[in-house]
Image 1: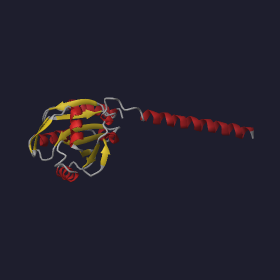
Image 2: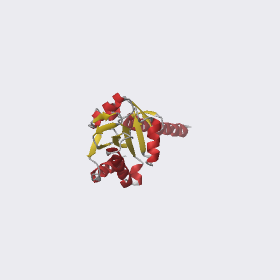
Image 3: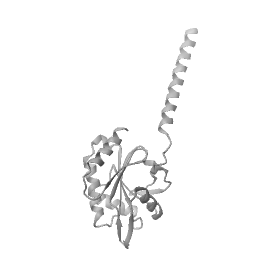
Image 4: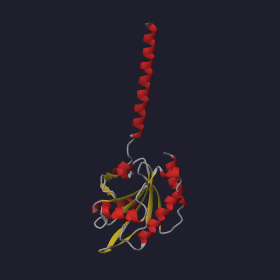
Amino acid sequence: MKKIAIAFLLLFTIYNCKEADKKEVKAETKKEISDLSIYNLPSKWTTQDGKDIELKSLRGNVLVMVMIYTSCKSACPRLVADMRDIESKLEKQTKQHVKLILVSIDPKTDTPERLKSFAIENKMNQEPWIFLRSTEENTREFAAVLAVNYKKISPIDFSHSNIISVFNPEGELIFQQEGLGVNNDKTIEAINMEAGKI
């Protein structure tokens, strides 16, 4: 009887230790979002599939983001090509931890349906691609965080910065690539380095 009691006590102690370890792991994964994180933005966004999300739902992934609008005929097709080039250079393992995100600066025109057809036309309607739109106010706020300037120059045309931004899994900006058709080696390096930590 004494042996059974000791065995039970030992099992109970081991169980409690394991539960404490689990709680510690959960506490670590729920660490606070830093002041520099885009996950502090409370804005709601809609994907090309009509799904409403908050940016913090993307936490834990390396984010590669660019701001475009689908009716653009000049810089945006080049930015889309640059994003595709980045994707083509990522290793399969890295891609599992990366989201390639195109954010519309023209939410009035770029409805979820329009974003969906643009994604299909450009063969970007699968993982790891996401298209997002929100209100004009949220879009303006987000552009300010990325240091992307844009201005409406006609009912269907915008002048805008050509910047691709890389965020670590905690939503902190770690690298920006500026320009069209530029060398993206440092961008790839930044993505691989962050994805390797996950």
